[in-house]
Image (cartoon, rainbow, N blue to C red):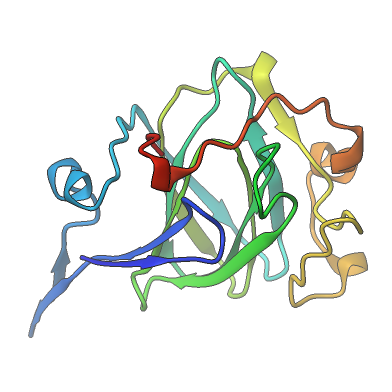
Length: 194
């Protein structure tokens, strides 16, 4: 598995090897033992699968607060999407900064999102599917969202924000400045678990 650091501490791009033949390919998308060898020790407890029919569907920015905060491992099962993570860890040198990457069924890349990041994506092909693992169970009382087009964060989604296809929850989400933030930065380089 290829592991790439991003400009945001703790946020990683993982690209599993693919073993192809005339039938197609096989890929091991998660291996906890292998992940531990690169400093990632996460116990994923829930898998989610989402389908978005239309190009320009935006889901996010989503996260859960403690004690049910979630790390996520995100990949595209079908189609193509632009995946985004935003660092909201107080004290982080990259607080409020975002990182985006194209994930597709074809490229096989995955984004490993630690606790303390918001997550969202926009679809770039019809009938795009996203598949992701979570380190904690869904907890409605701890579920939060921030507006996808918050001007303080200024994510370039590659679409006109006025044409984004949103859920009512995402359309009504507040800006980051209005969020009472419980996340605190712990430097992954100083031995803290992701």
